[in-house]
Every structure is written in C-alpha cells, then in structure tokens.
Length: 95
Image 1 (cartoon, rainbow, N blue to C red):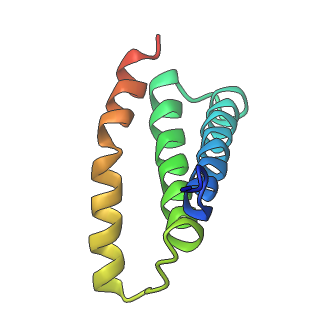
Image 2 (spheres, rainbow, N blue to C red):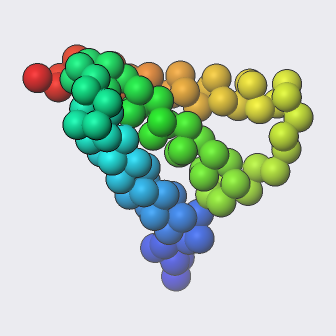
Image 3 (cartoon, rainbow, N blue to C red):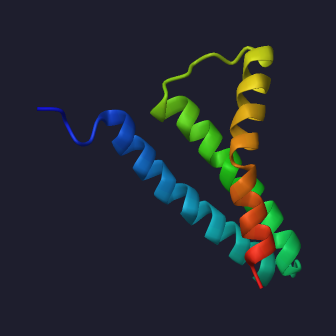
C-alpha cells in the first residue's frame, strides 16, 4: 500500500502553512507599522512569502542544493512565474 504522506508532501504542507504565516505577518507589519497602503503591503508581503517559499521548498522539499547563479536564476524565475497567478489574485481581490 502506498503511503499517503511522503516526506516531500509533508514538508510541502508544513512550509505551505509557514508561507501563509509569513504572508499574513509581513502584510500586518507593512500596514500597521509601516503605514503602507493595502496595495503596496499586499504586493511586498506576496514577494516576501514567495521568496520564503522558494528558499524553503528548494532546500527542504525538493532537496535542490545547487547555488550556481545560472541555475538559481532559472529556477527562481520559474518558481515566481508559476506563483504569479496567485499574486495577481491576491493583489486584485483584496478590498
């Protein structure tokens, strides 16, 4: 019988929750302490969260250990582009 939660899936779930915490936490700081507008706070918190997700997924979910600049740039651009739709939804749909 196949395992329902592999290490990769479990780590992805854990870091997904932590990414949400980073997003909400940074948004709160940017709005309440930095007096940013909702738009800018949302945009910058999304960048923080996706950056956090990229690094944690690279290291602990997918075990990608290469830090060669050419490889990281390609990997990061692909990762951020794939998260672009969520960014647009988050920025456009926040009142």
